Amino acid sequence: MADTKLLLEEMTWPEVERAIGAGFTTVVVAAGAVEQHGPHLPLLVDAVRGDRLALEVARRLGNALVAPTIRVGCSEHHMGFPGTLSLRPETLRAICVDYAASLSRHGFRIVCFVPSHGGNFAPLAEMLDDLRDAAGPGCDVRAYTDLHGFVTLWESAVRDIAPGLVERVGGHADIAESSEMLCIRPDLVRGELAVPGYVAAFDDEVAARIFTDGFRSVTPNGVLGDARGMSREIGELCIARAADGVAAALRDRS
Ligand SMILES: [Zn+2]
Figure 1 (tube, rainbow, N blue to C red):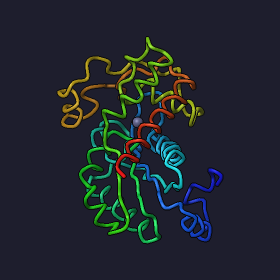
Figure 2 (cartoon, rainbow, N blue to C red; figure 1 turned 90 degrees about the vertical axis):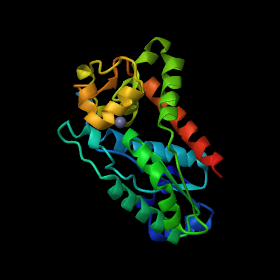
Figure 3 (cartoon, rainbow, N blue to C red; figure 1 turned 180 degrees about the horizontal axis):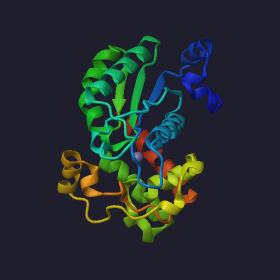
Figure 4 (cartoon, helix red, strand yellow; figure 1 turned 180 degrees about the vertical axis):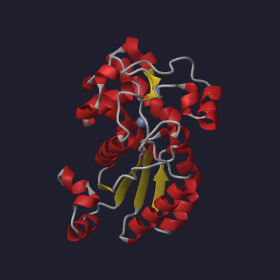
């Protein structure tokens, strides 16, 4: 089946019916964000990265379709920056519950939620029981919820191509994420505006401060890491490594 036929919202209902009948009973849903990504990237980064990640994960899982990305996520910690939209965790939960229930009713047997935004990992982990209840018996709901593991996948990709630049992986609008955007929407990357963000040690205290005092208290320009040195080559490997790691973790939960 051609890739365009993996995208649920581009299919007709008879095509969806035939795909499910032919064994395409897994579906992948990305949970993204519309939030600030520093001075050099647009707000839609995590939404379009979610589109791509979900597609790559579906290809790797096999017999899997891709449901529409949930474009807006839990971004309260980014509200100090103009333009950011944020869902309350209960709003995101309500949306995910309705996705799981809808997809289950049509005969999907495995629904995989994949966050493409750091702020969605913890809410997804907390709502997993509710999602399973909503899907009912006969439909398994899985979620990838390892934020640290995700950043490690990016670090491994940058290290393999540009070992000297691995310190620039910070997890937000950094060399990894900016490189992915050079592959996905190069027209929207303002490379000349890329400047370092917060690049000092990222410990538990800094992580906690981001969620209590807001992202801007840690990084005035909105970047964690540094995007300088970004390239399409790094971006393609970051996309592939992330998809490999996420797909493997979701498969292990079978
Ligand atoms: Zn992002």
